[in-house]
Structures are given as C-alpha cells and as structure tokens.
Length: 117
Image (cartoon, rainbow, N blue to C red; front, side, top):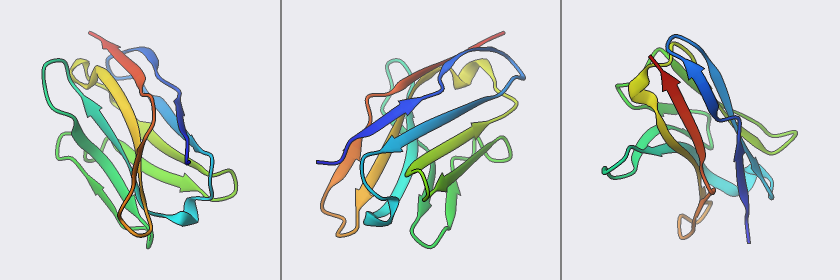
C-alpha cells in the first residue's frame, strides 16, 4: 500500500510563498501521474497541478504563473511551490498519485494553507 504524506502548509500573508511537499512511500517511477488538488469549503475537490511520467505539467488557470509543480526521484517527493498567494488560495491541499496501470489512485491526508489578506 502506497502512502502519501503532505507537509509545508501553514499561514501566510497575501503575496507570500509556501512550498508544499508530498513524501511517497514508493519510488515515484511507479506512478503514471502525480498532482495537487484542493477542496474549497462547500465545493468539490479541484485540480491545482499535475505532472505525468514524461514530465509534462498541467495547471489550473487560477494558479498558472504563480504555482510550480516538481518532483525529486532521489527522495521520492512531489512539490508545489506557491508564490504570490491570494486569500482565495486558502483551503486544504491534497497530494494525488495514479499507479502506472491507472487502476489505483492514492491520496494524502491533506495540508491546510491559509492566506490572510
């Protein structure tokens, strides 16, 4: 069973930066894709950014130019660098990974990001 553990959330002022980390219990090579999602209060979970096995990335329009997804195979960790944070970025962020077969999706427990105005 793969385990994903997020960290790096916290409280920051508008315009500030945070870097989220997602440590995987398996090599990142076993995943078809990985990503970050968030779930604003009262809304469905939404995609923030994804990265697939060949390195291509995809971002939600609301975060393009501000957030950057990356990964480190050496320490089996996925990152989300968040710059120019806005109050509307406040919510819980979840790490996601899809197995190479596409049959299994893993989720972390989430990390809270709060941006004050």
